[in-house]
Image (cartoon, rainbow, N blue to C red):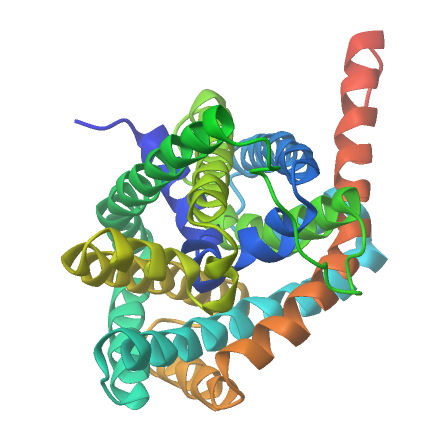
Length: 355
């Protein structure tokens, strides 16, 4: 039987791995576009995911408080907490809208189905799983995240094999880059922005679950394992796209395109994997927003899904292009304040002083 720390790690991964992540679009935008230096950006995010996850989950477990608003008060201060609380709650709900929009784009591109079908189906599954409470969210993440991991790593190994062949028989730069977006012109800034908005969203979504863990050790391991898995998935996506070549940059869903080129059946299966990633993120976000608002599942979940549906009408690309960089820069200060709090706490503990 899997340990509870795995369920925590799977939920952490599920909260971060959404439409942009599993499709390969985020890896392309924030890392691959900078060439070999993008690997350093991935290293920044791995360390950041591990630190932010482990420390925040341990604090939530220690307090047994499932409100990320309370965690924000402790780590960032009461004034900033009120501001971040509103921003993160809006971002969590907006994230559901992004997932619904992504589902509509996916079913149309991969299978030629009406986008409305993808949106409605994703909303229903995410809604029912979030209404199941902690067990429902644990269940959907524990079931779907292994499939995301296996398929993404498999394509990453395939890409790495292609890169190795090119390294042996060509002097060309196999870890090519493209023109980065003006919003994130540098590789290190891209890594920080990526870490910021994902940690703000992912950790906020997972705090209610971390508060129910039995021990501090489970919380720490959940954050560490989840952060490492996220890093592995980023590397695998990057290697897969680098191995495919510049042609992968022309697809809005590069990982799905790569899977289809490997085999049509694999393309369909990976499309389902991406869809599952959207569902896990939407379910976790919904549960966190419902918990934060202090409402009971049911009618409240339906109302939140209705708002997310309206947001999804803006379109998948438009939502990612507008929301992710904005919340990333905003979350940069959140990450700094959080790490400063834990640094001070550790320092006072070492000196034997009271916090």
